[in-house]
Image 1: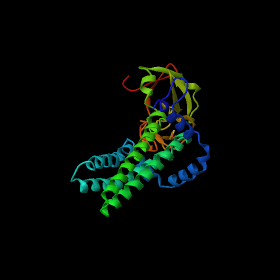
Image 2: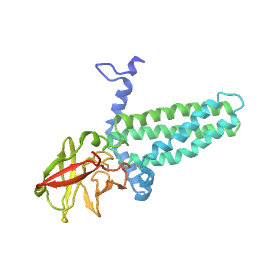
Image 3: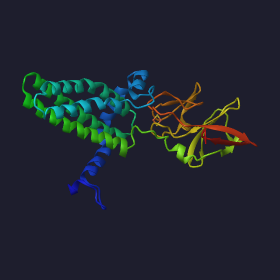
Image 4: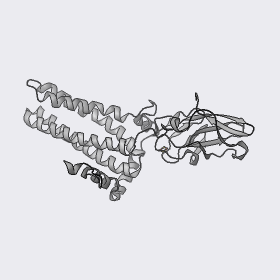
Length: 293
Ligand code: FES
């Protein structure tokens, strides 16, 4: 057990194995082919799978059903007279696994490569788990209850390992988290200087610092000035390097599109809005603040 845990001098075996997965470049041609396949889905479908309209990622919500039903089936399999209930839960989990996997693939296709490599192993583990549960259900339907139970327990172990990899993706590699969340803390309260208004080009976004926060600044011909957090809420891409059109800015990394006036997500993969600052010009100096601060 000690070998699995990190010590002060080197990472444990689990972390060392995950580090190797993150840097496994040999898998990249496969990643790119799979990414192309997922990205060939219509944009509206991918937005629905990301959870852009909901304002919350869909994948972590959908995975609750297979994990919950399969864990419940494992408990029922320990109890006498619960054979039918356990089989039903295994079947419900299998039916719910498909939409959860689809949402996961949509999110996966918009990650950085080290995240995609871990994500691919996460998906492979879960695919094996689905196979084990399908075999378990088939065995149960044929009346081979012991075999069905054994396969289901093997499935539970495998899906738990897959879930742990999903946790690594989210907590260690920051996949799927809101990268604009620290802005409200780092920006500080009240009006702060951004720069002399005359120094900002008209119609071209630029990046400036507002305190500790990089901000996207767009001065428009009608005198309007938009200031948004520059690091995209999806994966921290620089919005100031993106395209501006139809009152929105499109992130150059994965195409999340945010409305300039309020940061609303028009297209994913992002599900979290982009922080927008209020602006004013005082004696030629552009100032900005987060609303309500
Ligand atoms: S960083 Fe991914 S869309 Fe902006």
